[in-house]
Length: 275
Image (cartoon, rainbow, N blue to C red; front, top):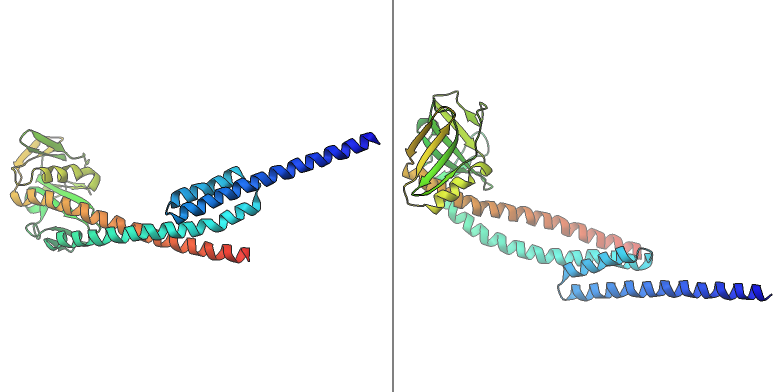
């Protein structure tokens, strides 16, 4: 009889302890949600989301509390996204003005692809007809350079030098396409990552004499870069940085708009589930 009473008392005590423990966890989890709401109200959306992450990771067994957190999360994401969209709109407005300004002093050249921008001084000039470097910018701001040098050089890269300062492009090996030696001259089409150094160098030495060396597997060929080509290398690169930033800002705005749609959809679904 005594043993039965002790067992009953022990079981009751354990039940009380378990319930007490759950109650403490629930209270602690709801405190985190309360902190998340406060942070959200003060604009600390990242901190608020971190608090909700803590609820999920630390109190996995508190299903009802986690459902409340799940309902709160998309509302915080909505506010965070609206804030980021406002910032994106401001950046786009500023960059649009800058991009329009640089495009106004450049010329658009139509080709079989999407076309490109260059300086008005270089519009209509064909690389195959004159040795040198021809800077171009795609409509979304990608900077490229076309080099043209006499056949027989075996060119794979170009270098620039002004005073004691010099720089070199990446090497592009002959492939019949980007490095084409099939015509009367050697043409290399440099991609942005291969020629950004040339544009930066030309910007740094704007107005100064620049010598260009075509590095080949047979010999090197050096010229003084014509003034219109040297100016274009720098000015087109400067424009590409601005237009490229605008393009990336527009892509970011599109991403944020989609994120906002997802957050609002989750708000609606969570609300229906709670009801």
